[in-house]
Image 1 (cartoon, rainbow, N blue to C red):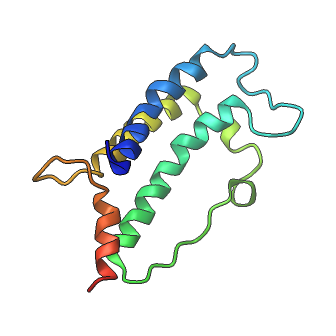
Image 2: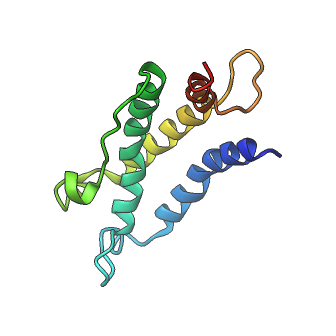
Image 3: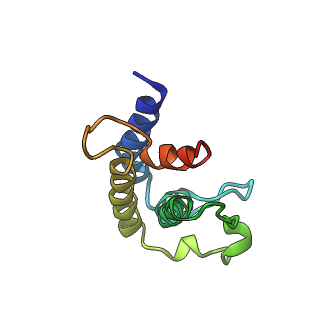
Length: 129
């Protein structure tokens, strides 16, 4: 298996690993942050759903512009501290699963069906022009 195939397989497997782990957590601890102040289980799971639209936006930008400017994203800086806690966890997990499938699907060339990082190849090919 090539490194591209391994990456795609890892991306594809993530929902099947993450979602059952989140669902097995007792509801009373889902939103509880550890003493370190790190995110709760709920926040980490919702973050996975929230960043996919950003991935797609950035990929589209890289494919449509010669020298795109990609603005950094820091949830601690860009969002209210409790923003992820306000999201519906079930809906977020569903979006994560759907969007991850879409991301994995975008990795394939339509004609061959072979695993390729289509968007990465498109961006790389510009530098060779």
